[in-house]
Image (cartoon, rainbow, N blue to C red; front, side):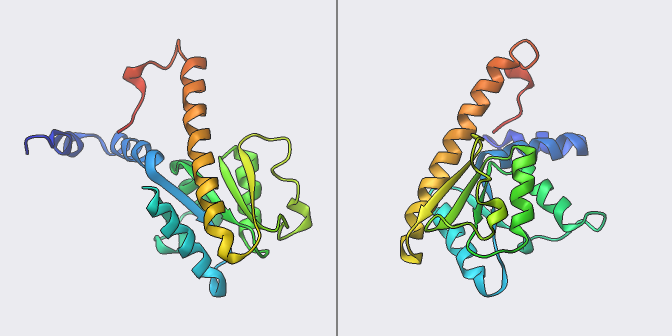
Amino acid sequence: MRGQENIIQELIMPDHYRALYNAARCKKRYVLIAGKYGDYRKRLELIKRILDSLGFVGLILDEYPDIEEQNLLEKFVTYASICRFVLIDDLVAAGHNVELAICHERRFVAGLLRLQGRASTAVQADVADEVSFIQEFVYDSDADMESSVLEAARWANAFVSQRANRLNREYGDWRGPDKIMGD
């Protein structure tokens, strides 16, 4: 057990503290992937593989069990809250359009992947305008999508790091190193 003392600490932590500790660890490496399922699922799996090449763990919601007291939007919010950022494949209109609105409302950091800069619905064509925490990444063809995913992930990761530094400074009197959960 030498070098793994944290395992013993986790065993004796109260449940609520263990849950928060694990959420804080997820915030370092996990990325929520949103988009259309069904015939388009392979695109989500491609994004997941690309994220893996960067050391991130991509999460696609239907791979995880539901909490019976939550509807699907609440499930999205739960996962988005514990993930480092969200990547959204905005090729065709689907449930991710509502999830994108949630990212906007809750200020979740999100990379928005769009083929030739076209939104899946005109209502959200400007969702990334005038906010810093959502950015659009355009690709010209499916073959070109990988570079946009890489660019989006790098941007989002850097944005989250900068946000953490800013919040640590801003909350300096209240948030000290001893009060930050992490690795």
